[in-house]
Length: 387
Ligand code: FDA
Image 1 (tube, rainbow, N blue to C red):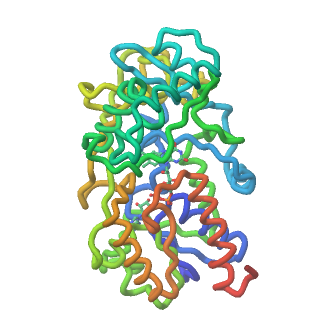
Image 2: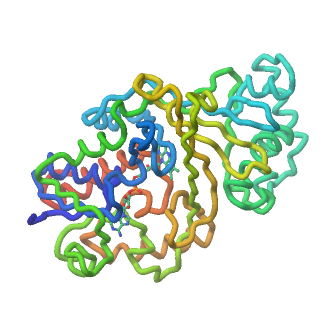
Image 3: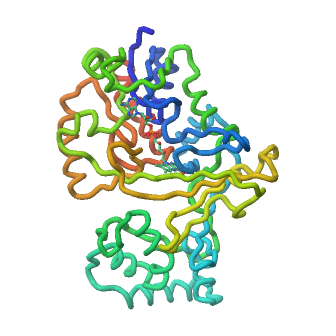
């Protein structure tokens, strides 16, 4: 194909730009993707033995309050009325999360109303506060008090970061939301749901245009393939959604990420835990949470009644060979990112986007929203279309 635009990476950021450029501007778009499948980290597939849809890179729940993103995504998929809820196993007892009136009353064996519960948490927070919090533990205690911190935050955070919270900077958390109602909806957004026929069908529909050519298993840095960096930079506009440090050959140092390991298992029971996500708050359980995928789609009556798929999630620091999932974002990382942003200015025809290209955690609606703005304000003007 004779392409007008090269998109590196077929996640939501890259596909949104590709879709807009092809449909809105009539451009020929070449998408290259390193992996064997489309869709980036939102990719899902049906587990072979059970047919249950599994999110390959961790559970993905769609939610947004951005009306233009909601209108846009509904062009490609319908959504179920799934509402996400999370529970936590602490000392062998199950509590609702985020911390709410139900959690507080169960934990303190009480029947407080909202005002009494708020007063209790404020009193506990004031009791534990140390003035200027020096680490994550002190910060968390100053927000919700020691008992709730020790039960629901301390060990879970230690497992997520492989670091004791007293050794983590206070700024890792800015707030710890506590709800003084029994509402345990995980997200507060106006719209929430899961794609009716799965993420991959949605992602494939975005690329379903004869002007869009998606080439899989093609790495931008592999000089033997035709759409490689040396052959394309400067000669064709590029949307780059891979890691920003990799683009510049790590010249300013590597940016640190956390990764996840997933342990998937098919169990010969119809229902393992009765809900989609169970967090494990104690340190002696090595995983942070278990996902049970059948519960994301209770409407799918074709799922087997005698089998289920679960996935245990383990968290650790990433090496260069691992999938980067969550930016660590230390002061050193932020410094390096600024240096990369300076270098970026020299790449006039390359637009860096998405979570890897900007080194930030983005929910799906944020990646799509950022791509819609980038298309409008940067990509369309490159081709002489209005900003
Ligand atoms: P994404 O990573 O999806 O795509 C980038 C693509 O570029 C990848 O496919 C990669 O292979 C490709 N690429 C990289 N380098 C390349 C190269 N050199 N050559 C060719 N291709 C290359 N969001 C949400 O809204 N709800 C949720 O519940 C969750 N859950 C969740 C769980 C976990 C564990 C994580 C890590 C993330 C989430 N997310 C989420 C966030 C969601 O995954 C995120 O918003 C999207 O992946 C962002 O899409 P991008 O296109 O930016 O990146």
